[in-house]
Length: 63
Image (cartoon, rainbow, N blue to C red; front, side):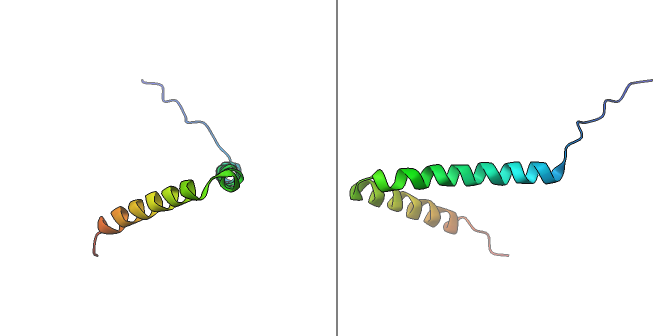
């Protein structure tokens, strides 16, 4: 008879809060870096965000 190992038990509430905390931390890090950038750097970043959004919009499926 084969022994079946059980998976690790996790607290889903704690996992959700940890994930949210790391997302807030990442966003805060980006916000701290934003004021130190030049206008040209901000424009390049905005152009890249627009390019990615356009690419994603073009790949959407019509349901």
